[in-house]
Image (tube, rainbow, N blue to C red; front, side, top):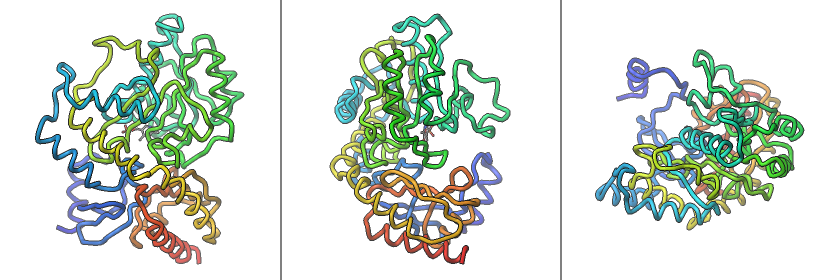
Length: 399
Ligand SMILES: *Cc1c(COP(=O)(O)O)cnc(C)c1O
């Protein structure tokens, strides 16, 4: 079957809630993917950083197969032999006291929101239903009705109201606005250390440090959404480490399972996690043995293959080389580690389509930005191949 036929069927029977590039992938290995026509591409999106370990990593595949044969789901009505290991390993890897596993990223964000609100009422002493959470403009934290309710992107919200109250928006990176927004009812500040979906936007230096100070001073939880920025993407295990701070909670997902299976988690300290009692919160699939076995191996691969270091080492070099590409359409290159945004002065989509024709898969984000985020297993040689393809496309389109 040809590409056009797959697309026709999908368009006919599937909801049109995405606008993908018209490539139909059938196989993937490491940084390479192959479409139904047999064309090969380098994947420079890595499923929004969910496949930091590379596609179909053999070790994770093996762990998944082994566990799938034994037991896939117990529900949390019973215990399973993978969850305890997962909890211990992720806490030791990340330095948090306790973890609550969920499935999608949005669910883990919801978990953080619930934890913060309940901590506010039960520990901080905020009056019932009065807790406030501060978030940033241009945030992306997922797609549930509560989460899109505090988005500043009109399209994410249009038609989906009414929304959950209790959220306040400040400009990203503005510590004065944060200080002014905090009231005695503020329970948490929820922030992406680097904003991915809004175009790899870095806050001004010192912002997170300042936010940490303010939150400590005012008894407000600092919660970092590291679903995309975490687990090595920026060249540190967590992007918040770039400012030398520790938040009170962190949210992880995406690469936590190396792209095999949705596993997400909220990580925090004993005090915050202590607000959850049996029956307060849960998920049928959250913490299931298949997901836990996959996540355990995905974390082990991250460590054993030193992928965090790889990102720290190759990222700055790649960014420098990108900066050498001359074009009247390029405004700037920005990023951290192997997470780079090429900011254009016009729509990025035609460039992404041209890059696809050259065998490089990227996706535009927020209209004018091309995001480069390959699997962290990528080699310098493969990055060089990609750079040549990028240069060729800019030369072809811009002359
Ligand atoms: C992807 C993402 C989410 C949502 O994760 P899903 O698994 O799509 O629900 C939340 N926050 C950030 C920063 C993300 O990049």
